[in-house]
Length: 188
Image (tube, rainbow, N blue to C red; front, side):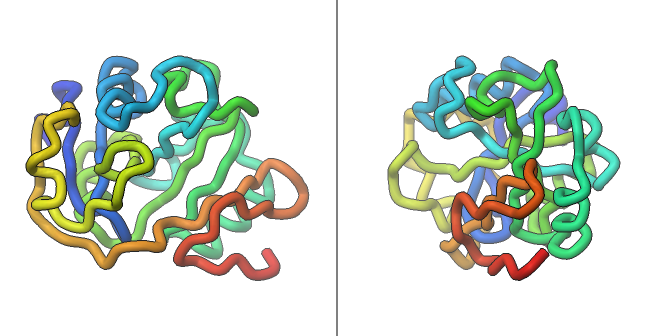
């Protein structure tokens, strides 16, 4: 918790993949998380970093509008590995926002990352602990030798592995699945 409060990056188990968590409202922490992934830290909108919420109320910290479809999906699939794209608030750091002005949010199911978000009471980054395009990290040992990562703390553990979260654009009238993951979106 102190690492997050100090603007650090933590590698730890999420629901399906080993990932990186940082304070999503700290531009410096988000930029460090983006650099560790070799991702752009500008508003290019290419491969934005998703976030996890400590609770439903925290969505208001990063979202400008949480529409009826997003609410319906959240009520049905959260907590769980469903990332919902919704309009981002204006103050959200650029690496978290796609080219359409959307942010991917989720309320994770049981995992150390969910525990950390609740303990800190903060919205945290949620990106896999690997170089962009590289193999998924399934244990803390998979990332120990990666010198390119700006990680301040590694929480030991392992995860079941792919597929990761399902990613759905929830800004329209119907859900649009952008990445198929562990959750199969049925008629919402």
